[in-house]
Image 1 (tube, rainbow, N blue to C red):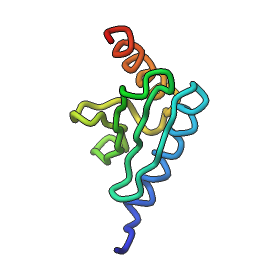
Image 2: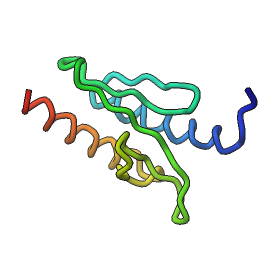
Image 3: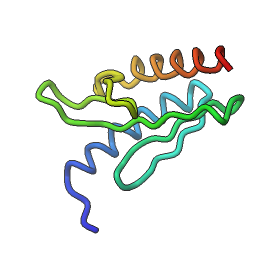
Length: 94
């Protein structure tokens, strides 16, 4: 299976988000094809989310598994903060 330049870009941006999420205490696994992150809270492993990265006319964006945008891939720190908030809300409801 050949990897396209687009997949390299996607993996690059997902790697930047992975670093930010790990610094915030989340467990992150990078799936290679198609590139996506599996994210979980080590204290609530049953709660997990998958984030991918997509190119749009305005640039690259992180996207939730249900299709809504998380944030710009140019700002992985802000996107990571949003992921942490969403997972924290899910943990509060368990």
